[in-house]
Amino acid sequence: MSRTIQCDFLGDNGHAAIQFGTCDAQRTRGGTDGVWLLGWGGAYRGRQNGGAVPGWAGEVRFQELAEDLGYYQKIKLDWVGNTTSGPQDIQSVATGDIDVGEAFNGAVVKLNAAGAPITSVLSSYGADEGEYTGYFVLENSPIRSARDLIGKKVGMNTLGAHHEFLTREWLAKEGLTNDEIKTVTLTVVPPVNTEQALREKQIDVAALNGIWRETAQQRGGIRPLFTDKSLFGAFSYGTFVVRDDFLAENRDAVADYVQGTARAIRWTEVTPRDEVVAKFRDIIAKRKRNEDTQSIEYWRSSGIPVPGAVIAERELQTWIDWLVRNGELKEGQLKAKDLYTNEFNPYANGTYPDNSGPDGKALAHK
Image (cartoon, rainbow, N blue to C red; front, side, top):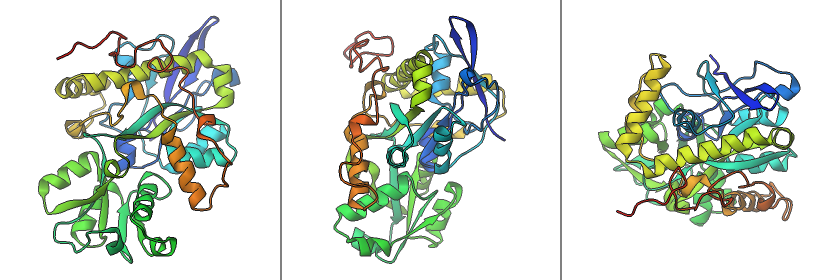
């Protein structure tokens, strides 16, 4: 079942029907990884409905939170259903099936390199003290270093996205040669089965985050070999992207989406966790979809380490450099500064001080 979200942009000439959908950043890293779609089927093309829009039951997206908090001024969301997606779905942004998407930055860079006219406008997920991906081994495993992984298997939810990039980057940083890295088998395992596959020794390392990480650690008997946070520190790994033609023709809609979503992300950054989780419960209850809310009880943070999800150039440049080293890009083929804009983010464009809360006011010192 696909989730279609209709978003009405209230323009000067009345309603311009805009379709839009999403798939969770954190959950996608642990569920479908790498791509989280947010599509506006723009009325400027005469499309009123249609377009596959992935999402996740039992979760609350930043855009849903933004709407509930009243942060959007010109767009309105109409949620219809839920599904999941994979890295290939970002192609839907490039082909025009949807108009805004979330993606792992490595995938964003690769799509740009392929000639897709897209621009990143807001960070969508990352790693911080509360939220991260851990690459776990059994407690009694002999694997202690990258070299111990030669000839071993790493289980992850999909290839070509966050987990694969991070695994290969860690192996390279730990000194393995390209030929040695090729001996490490990356195996696709559904997130719900990854912990079990590790415990049954079907794989040697399991990539786990969110509820999967928390519950696996509660059961014990595993330890992290490395984490994405240990690799890069607090870091944003994904961005919302828009097609350049859509941005040119719908700047007000994009600007409203970015400012509202940035403020919602900031709200989660400065609000006590229990209040955030309570708000998520309330939003899910109001949806009346008979959803299991267990996963939100394991919510720890937005994972985005900067106020309002402002994009940093290095968060894209890192993956440009990675692709150059691996021979997938030519030196100088892409420049990170050409792939993103913080123009619409109030925490970057001077509208709000970067250390302010979701209302732009200075935070009270505790």
